[in-house]
Length: 162
View 1 (spheres, rainbow, N blue to C red):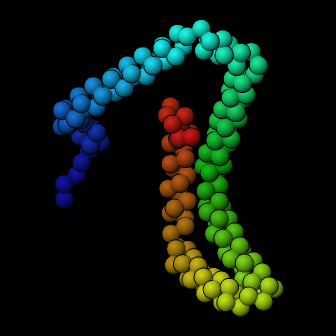
View 2 (cartoon, rainbow, N blue to C red):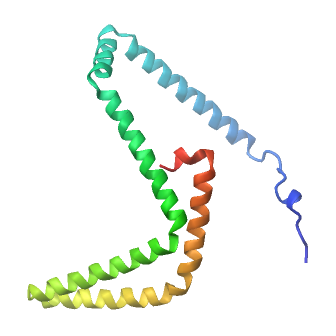
View 3 (tube, one colour):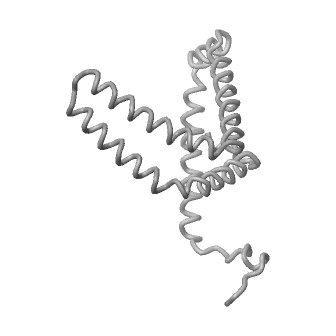
């Protein structure tokens, strides 16, 4: 059996797709240039600058900044919660979906919709079979989610996950 040490596992193998990389970079520069050209044309007009200044003064942009800040705060909180309670969140999601299916079945019975109650009952049974089938894999899935959330939390690319 061949063993791989840590250094050889992470050594680069050189560029394999140099043509496609170059083509991507040329297109990226072209697209960036096009966006910059259009932005300079739009921002070069006097009425556009006045409208932009009015938006800044009336609070349009501060609301956007507050919204983005709030979204980042909730996203970071969610990542911390997922990292701390991955299995609990998984079991809660499974339990909630089962409870919702039971509630739908009860509502159908209360509304005297026996076809709907039968369909909900069959789907509930299938969902219970599925839960029994994946029950042993929940702990592994929780550990996998916990590890990925830890990587996202420690990474500089945290903003890309939102």
